[in-house]
Length: 432
Image 1: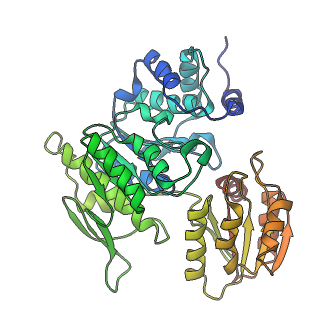
Image 2 (image 1 turned 60 degrees about the vertical axis):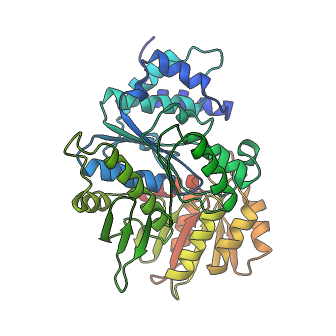
Image 3 (image 1 turned 90 degrees about the vertical axis):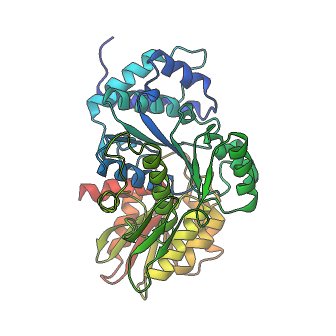
């Protein structure tokens, strides 16, 4: 069979999305065993949680790269290009390597159940990292943790960011249920760090960690990050080390939590391997260099200044609450136009309540993915609580163009509600 081109390769991968979500490790285990277990050929960090996984992964990867390690990062979803999911030292996988990885993984997909989209892509990432001889890989779960395809790895450190009810059909209807699923990434004897705050969640994670004889370190208990009095910097008080005058690499106060998790995870990585390699010396220089290189698009990302245009995925209740708070605290007297599209498995009414109070104008739109809420449904829900100017413009790019055209230089436009909406927005601005 001839080698498929990049576009044909992606077409075949995306078609797998029709088969939906199938939780379990048998299929990916079979694929990886036929590929000589690539996931065991480098060290890994595993990250689960509701929000902040990508930001935390970006920070850990950047610190490891700054220390001199060849570092892979696997995240999802992508915003514009598929290749964003699989990176080494901040560089996306090439189109040619996407094809090579897909061919290898597809040939190994011989089990009784064919692999899903996420299983194939996860195996591609693991295979690519082994081929390129990465030393560390930072791996973000797709959904949940216990039966997530990524949970085939045995990491050096596990990270659980925070908990907010999501995907209840798969992950359960309580925080305790959710903690059981996310806590499934904690491995015997492997330390874990977490920013989970709910009592029932912490209780469950503690129980799992104790059963597996794994040390569990908590944000605000064993490590913390506080603002430097009178300065725009932060001081980190850690498990083994303290770092002063750090610059938070990503906007939003919620990133304080994600940065703290990344620093705690980095401490554990470097402490475990201290003395085995001179690179395992976590210095202020490593930290500053690493944080200076951190990029995580589509999360409070400023695209324009006049008018101010901000992109933020804000794809669930907690993320929309954080965005609503950020807009209220930072926009001052700017008139805000909110461009929003939400997926049909999200609590859209409660999300709107978090985002609409600061907006004067609202444009309801719809990402091209078939899981998008119809604009008529979303606008009807918005009209119940929003008295300002409301328009429906289904095409995301047209909605953004209109929002900018009706805004003055001192106004603001925020595009939010879904990473798919933000992805289409990124595509528009990248074309300008």
